Length: 361
Image 1 (cartoon, one colour):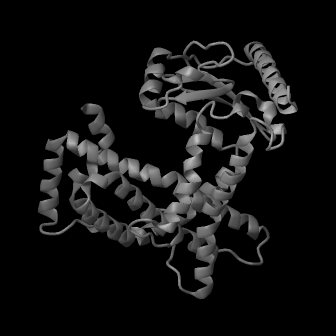
Image 2: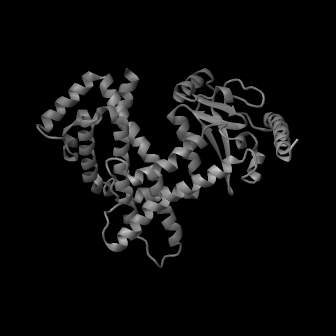
Image 3: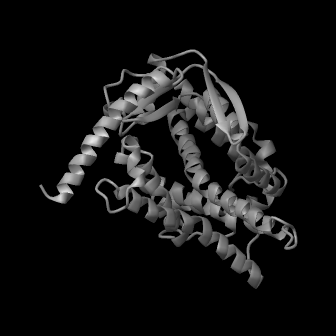
């Protein structure tokens, strides 16, 4: 047997042994976890993890394996806290050694994610930066850009209604890039959108349970990148570079535009203008601004797109509501598109909630 095959065989044997030991220690040393589907030896629920329509499967699990309140102990640095997570739909699954906690309702997500986040100082710093620059009054300066982007979207939907998902994605990206960085997004094949797509798409692969051997064989994180089964290290290095470019490229572009005096006011430029060169910790504060702006794009683009798509689907499913809303628009803004100034005059349109419509269908 060649040295390479020998190393592969040894790795496989050690991996199987470690998986077995891990399962034994996992069973007897861990605190109770939320209920979940029955698990197979070694691989757990790996074969049951859905590759499509995940929300339907997880919702079914939430109803089938409903449990009581779950107590979660969290230790971070010198802080310790106990969180009581609400019941109803909190499910645990095991994907070849990777624990998954599935939260099927907003209350459970708030209890675990929002309360837990308060113990991490970087999260608090980002939230303060965002709240300071994006409060209700300061956000009004971005309304003309939102209106302009919406008018463009409407004309594009008339021309290419079959491409509505792609158009909604570009619309969301256009608004967020303008608000966060003051940068323009082209109607298609935009360089900023492409940079973001190249950085975000790998996350879908990385977050897939059991996608890499290291998920089940943690010792692989200590082997060199050329070692069999360590291809994840090469991918991670490349993905890190892509994510770094997403965070840095638009941020640097704003800095350069500000230095030249030719820039559009934005979240980044507004906060950078308030930073004093002589204040201690300026670099750390700049990092908070850069990371918060990056989070605005990565977290906001798909969310904004989903909200708009949900509204469209809700209107299609509730034509009576659509007709009443259209009647109000025609009455308040005859022969034109409504503006933000018309909002107070359109209580019915303002009250339309796609989530409630969806539940009532």
